[in-house]
Length: 349
Image (cartoon, rainbow, N blue to C red; front, top):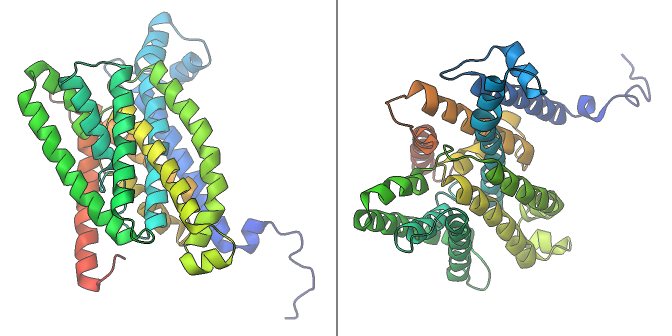
């Protein structure tokens, strides 16, 4: 059959590009799952709301008790989970793409650990509370990232050296946290547990405002730098040939990624493995080998909301189970699989 010239002129870009069409389907599917998990998380609890009651309450109706449960107790937790998940998911995608290493995740290379050390130190040693603890966590993450960058610099930054130094610092951070907790008061140690595994139990509207403003500033920077990151994927020499300032662009991307994970960690602690697994899962769903930034953020949202629901309702032990414990249960098998695959094939698949 003879092709008709111009037959595809009116076709949409997605229909002409199967990969783009698949990405759109994945984004829509993940968005639907995320919305469903959010609604279920708000509705289900010791006092369960029906879907009509929940929707009526969200638009300003409902009884006073329904409004209290939704707007004071459950909605802040869900919204904070969504916002910090975006931060973790994007930070992991940026680090892993930039350093070309699936192990290059903020929670693996010690950046989240640096935030936790600073928070626990300020809490147990200096008696700080509230905003001071969060600011300490932010400063700790930035300091660790800057230290790793300097130690890994040898006439340029090597991704593998960056990861190995970061892993060493991550182990040091865990040791310091363990020492501080053993030396601290029992009541303070219980509070410090959040900074070891991460949790959403203390969500507040102030936290949501901080994270929302941070994302409003950082997300435009992420997508402005995305084009440079795509060129850096081609290799430093080719990227430089295309007019990219390699080291300046890499440093800018690292600063943005560290800020994303540092602010999220400062608010909820280091939710284990969320940054680590989100981008690989997103890329496998999309099957394109691209940046997959939006799918990575959506996968992180689904993971955090699902883990928090499990922690609240399926692992009830009489005390609140931190969400980070559940994300750790999900992420640890993936890490073992990745390491075994790397050893067997000589590279990470």
